[in-house]
Length: 151
Image (cartoon, rainbow, N blue to C red; front, side, top):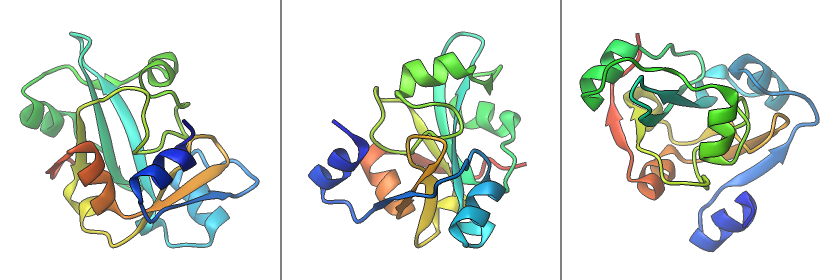
């Protein structure tokens, strides 16, 4: 099932936007969409030394504090997952990972600042597609936790 079919099946008010150029960073995405960078969110997979995975959704300009991530998960040693792990676990490439419609269920944490946005733009499944979606839908669909995890 494609990401578009997945969203449609759930009745989610979201839109996939093909921007025709690379959007692997929040700055690139904001520029391509012509929107403020504050409403661009990133979906980042972290892997702990013990192999555990956690998917973090945060504003594109925010830096995730792995110490805070360790506190809220109870697991130490978080680092960015390697691109092959991202693709295998989510079904999408690093830099284009959407926050919904993933290949497998992954524990998700949405940063408190991203959680309160009325609408945001996230990776849309490839490096040149963005997804307009409400963070409240991301949280509901994934049963995500909300925590302050930015540095």
